[in-house]
Image (cartoon, rainbow, N blue to C red; front, side, top):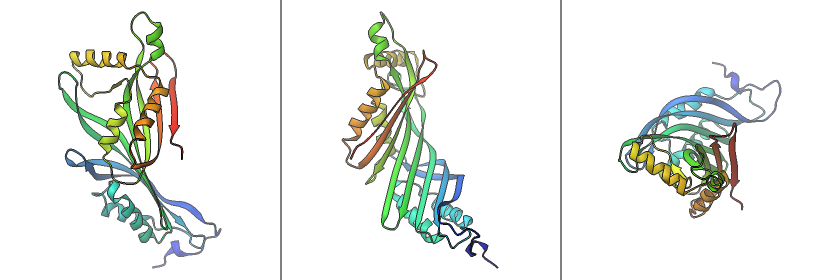
Length: 256
């Protein structure tokens, strides 16, 4: 049967990325407390394409994904990218998988337990001997405005926000460790279940720990610098302001 993809293209130009995007697939990821966690990933898989070929073989991406669907984690990421390169006969391969990750979280006073969802991504590229692997996590926090607290006779405005951290890593780490590091840098963590005694505790905790978005990104950055497994990082904080019709935003990334 004729292989149309191997024919010469009408316009012989090199393509940096070609492949499949937004594929939902059940996967298994590593879980610090339970060993494994079943979730659903949304995949982008790409390779480069030399100028002499008309197209790539899209079905081969899915074959590799199906083979490794129970091993989608930090330890195996490089191997999966190498397999994509070899299967597609490419010099470069790229993969990103976005997935919800769940952690059991206990309320600070009542001990009520529930599941918190965190949006996570594994991002990687492989080209020749070069490798680039990153992990991204999106973590909800609560912040209380230092200015509002300072100028008000009582109370202060507070709100939910999100912190997005992307790290380039050199060795294995647990997603849970990174998430907990980020949660500790807000005015208070966010919980799935709070009873009245918990609400009192969280409200007072936030009041005692006011944070601007600037404070949050700086504090996360200081904490990340204590971890040599992260060779680079970026930190974004966004507060969904409760008394303004806009969000407050800050971004910081590590310097060489």
